[in-house]
Amino acid sequence: MPASNLRVVVDARIPAQGWGGVQQVAIGLASGLTTIAPPDIEVLYTCYPEAREWLLPYVGSAGQLKFVPAPAPSVPGKSWLGRKLPAARRAYHAVMPAPPVPASDGTLEALQPDVVHFPHQSAFLTKVPSVYQPHDLQHLHLPQFFTRREIAIRETWYRAFCNQAALVAMATTWGRDDILRAYRLPPEKVAVVPLAPVIDRYPEPSPEDLDRLREDLRLPGQFGFYPAQTWPHKNHERLLRAVAKLRAEGVVVPLVFSGAATSYRSHLERVVADMGLGEQVRWVGFVSPSQLRGLYRLACCVVVPTLFESASQPVFEALSAGVAIACSNVNATPRQVGDAALIFDPYSIDEMAGAIKRLWTEPKLREELVARGRRRIARFTWERTARHFAAYYRQLAGREISDEDRAVIAAEPII
Image (cartoon, rainbow, N blue to C red):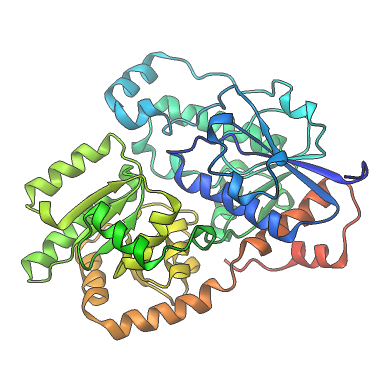
């Protein structure tokens, strides 16, 4: 690799499980950069030795992975404690002061990068020019789902990382406008770089794989699907109540939920028991990439009732996988789906139930939504995203940028 080439380090210190959509962003970015393989840019990825397997299939070579043994700073709410022991978490956070903003230990600088890219919220302080992706400011919109300490840490850390960044990248115009309002950043510092579905990068399941998946996960013959960790803002409870309402009307819709369990899962299981939905609900937990793709293949429809979403990977995945979708009308989601989904108020069980009933009982509607979805999702690719970031890497490093780079940077956001 010539010494004159631009070196970018992508901070991929993400555990193998429990980080959901953040991990998918790192996978998509690595896949896109590997596919376009810009000849003037060398990309390295810092990651944990024990968590290399989730990233390795998507990079150009194993030599791009640079292992860091120390654990990355944990964004509050993503820890094992936060998922499993909420009472302990609240008690701990009530007495413990917020930790200082984490700073580089020198590992990054030893790699001599021109630019560092933080594709997740947990960054650190460094003098290397950085791209920072905070993804969303959910703690400001739904503070009831966070402790005071979690909010204090997020506010302190996010602001520090945004202030140090040469570029703050948001996936949607809604997210850009939100962070500009909240943090008063210079508008020219915040860019919209749309993301894309990762599902098509996962192994394609064979018919035999699908049969085995049905058997292993004990899936119903037909089902609605919702892939999301059981955080309260994902709104599983109202979805369960909407399905219970439909059952009372004679429409039985089995549901399959994937995603790592949190402490809130026990509450949801009690809701299932209280409403007598036991045989209608399957919790399959964290699944492998190929299993996730298989679940989309087998699902009759996807329902995403989330209360907050700056950009939804399950929405992108459903559009890409060719599954009819109904989703909430919050934040950036309506613009994300365009005319390719049924939209409902996530706080209205009646509206949610009505949308699910239409998907479940109207096959022609499902076909039309799938066709619209394929047209819609064709505009979003990781190659496009990677070219967008590559143009910014060159610009931030003070390298010469091409007319194509200028056009990419100047283009109106598509979402």
